[in-house]
Amino acid sequence: MLNILIILSWFTFFSNNTSVNEKPSQSSEELKLAKLINSYRISKRLDSVSISTNLNIVAQTHANDLHLYYKESSRCNMHSWSRNGNWKECCYTDNHKQAKCMWDKPRELSSYKGDGFEIAAFYSDGITAQMALDMWKKSPSHHDVILQKGIWKNKSFKAMGVGIKGNYACVWFGFDEDQNQ
Image (cartoon, rainbow, N blue to C red; front, side, top):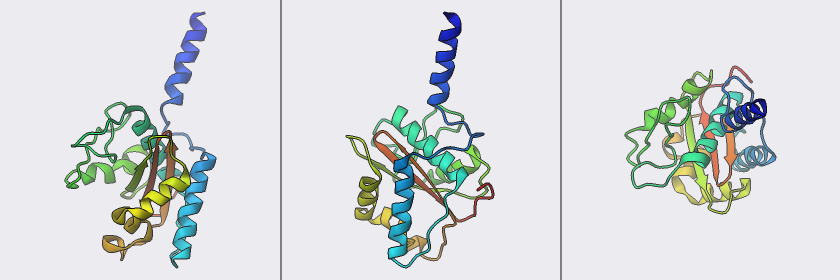
């Protein structure tokens, strides 16, 4: 009986934590979101962005962290990371003074060499790929990231990772190619 309990505890721990040594598999909704973003970019005469194994790790880990631990507050927004994982806690504020703690997550959690830039979405009844993209299209700052407008205009995304868990969707973009594709 003790062996069963230990095995169940081990399974529960690992099913709630993404291992940075594993290649993450993508759910059908995550694949759909990546395809929707790339189709939208192509419709606007932009190149598609390659799916990154490492940025998938970051996106899926963050979506899971948000799903399990995020509590909406007036101080820390959805780009924040809890203290409940193998990463540095991060309180990302709307004034962007803590941006570096988010930009560093790909290097902290994976072998991706560059900075990462996240867009995140929440829907209280569970989120789908289409819902996330529709929300980002209506948000000027998120829309600018997807279509590389505004401060992103002279940049070129080379990698993208997608994570969806429960009510949260996260997409991470990077300027560097993922060497572990």
